Every structure is written in C-alpha cells, then in structure tokens.
Length: 455
Image: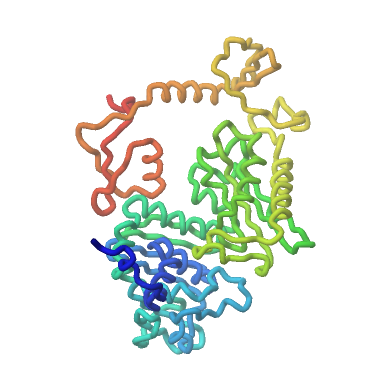
C-alpha cells in the first residue's frame, strides 16, 4: 500500500522560469490579446494609420503603424521585463512594460522601426528572455512594425483551447472595433488569414464612427453632446453618443460601451446606469445603443484590476454614476419631441408633453378607426385614449409576425458553401440559427435554411 503522506513533498518555491511564463500568460492569453497590446502601443506612439495582420495558421500577429517609432538607443531594452517609457504619468494606454516582454517569452518577436533622428530604420530580433539578439539596418517607412510568430509553441494547451474560425474573426474584429470606436481620427485595417475583415477610414467623431461599425445604424439616428459635460470640481467630463430609443436599439446589450481615457472597459456600475435610464423608453427585451466616454485625470484610475486592462477601479464612482445619468437625461430631453418630416405638417413639437410608450397587445379588436392622416397614419380610438398607428410600420409588423409564426430552420439535402463573408455577416447567420461552419480558408458551410425560403 502506498503511504499517502509519502506522496506529498515539502512545499517548494516555483521555478523562476515557470513564474515568468505564468506572468506572461496573464498578459498574453490569445491572438486577440496580442492585437490589443500592440494596438495600445501604436496609439501611444501617436499613430494615425494602424494595420493589423493575423495569420492563425502560423500563430502570427503583425501590427504596423506610422507613429513616432522607437529610437535605436532604446531597442536593446524594448522587450526586457518591466521596462517602459510610460509609467511616470500613466496617461497612456499601455504602461506596465510587460507586453513586449511577455510576447518574447511566448513566441518569436521581431521589431522594425524608424524614429525621427535615426538615419534609417532598424530591425531587432529578441530571444525568449527579451534580450536583443540581432540588430541590423532595414528599409522602412517612418513608424514601427511588430511581428510575433509561433505564439504558444511551447504551451500546446493554450493552442488547443484557443478560438478559431468565425469565432476568432469576430473576437479580433471586436478588439479592433472597440479601439477604433474611441480613436476616430485613426485609419484601421484588419486582415485575418490574408482576407480583409475590417477597414475603417478616419472620421471626425465617435458619432460618425458608429455607423461604420454598426451598419444598420444611420448617422441621423444618433445624438451626441459634442465635447461632453464637465464637472470642474472633479476635473472630469463625459462625452456621450446615443441612439434615439425609438429608432435605434439592440436585442443584446452589446452596444452599451463605456470608455475611460481612450479605452473601452467593463464597468458594470456605469453600464447599469445606462440600462436603467433607457429602460422606460425602449421596447421590451431591447437594449440601447450608447457610447459613454469618461475623461478623468490618470491618477483617479487604477488599471490593476485585470491584466487585460478591460476592468478598472475609478475614484468617485458614485459621482460619475450621477453625472452619467444626468448627461443621458439632458441629451434625451434635448431631442424628445422632434417631429419627423412626414408628420410635422399636422403635429407640433410643443404639443409633446412626454415621451410616448410603446404598447404591445395581442389583439386590436377594441380599436375603432377614426381617420387616416396624410395616407400614412391611422388614428384610432381605444378605451385608454387615442392611438396613432403608422401604416408602414403596422404592415411590417404583420409581415414580421407571419414570418415568426412560420419560421422553422430545416436541414438542406446538400450544404451551401459561402465565401468572402465578413465577420458581421457570419454573426447574422449565427443569430438566425443557421450555424455557419468554417470550411477551408475564407469559406463557410451552411447546411440549414429557413423553411420559408425553400421553394
């Protein structure tokens, strides 16, 4: 019989190399986290054009920018542990000095850069300890190109559990989209497996960026408070962009975006304020489109809540909650009662004393039609008062209900192959329960279709 006590060795300190690998794995846990960290560095380098190329088969990420570059004198220490140019003021997006070092430990790191003051560009190669192994001149435009290849080669379990296919594309587009949302003055290009997944041109504002990322939303459906409302006592300001609740809402809370000092983050307390403020104005089970960007002094933010910097601690959170709610209500109040171009001939904005509430009822047998207005609206009488029905919307709702009642997904006798799908198109197919599956490079297989489409 084996003695159970003998199976337990004495407590031993972890091997330093294992500790370093574990720490690196906290910062870099996927291809998406590599993209996130390198994008942060590019933005801190004042880039106006950022190109991200991801090759999942080679476990490679390459991020190119036109920023200020890294001087030759700083290249030997660029990938060493805990080295950074950003900590003294913490006003940048990346500041721990761990990203490049973690990448070097988990893959093969190459860096090309040309900074002002250097006669030409340089290419540096780093070993697994983050020490520069080779340095040579290279022809390069102003800026930096960071290439990480063979990620997790010595950590197979990470590769086995990593996302792939459409899920990976969607995740990468989310990372880049969140960064681009609050950096509208930057041009972005994301390619995955040599196929373009996301291209965003420079725009003047966050408000103009949203329709690029959310195709079904139009600029006219959004409202912005411009530079935002500031609290001089707290030296902070909210910049708010919201979708008009009667035109713009989502089936999921995926477009409730909170940003702090240029980074989209998860702050549940602030997201709940947005949800509760919009709740009375939205149809049932719908969520708002809202981007709230908080600018605060860097010393009021603690980013050490999460290695990915997606969560944080903010000082004076209750005051920011109250300020956010007031900002939303003020912006909604400034837009409530604006009549549409079709209705303004017979209804005045000044007559709207409060917002109308969307009502859902299974039957309209108690309605009595009184009149038709401008061949567009039907005025009806109900026990609770007068109801105004837009004919076009009513017709769409009838067709929608008919479609929902007859909606049934069935298997196809032969799969359909689709190529060149964008991440957004793949997401829509998944939402329809059509279950697209990756089927080779840039190709998806669909073996289900709605029965109503089969003739």
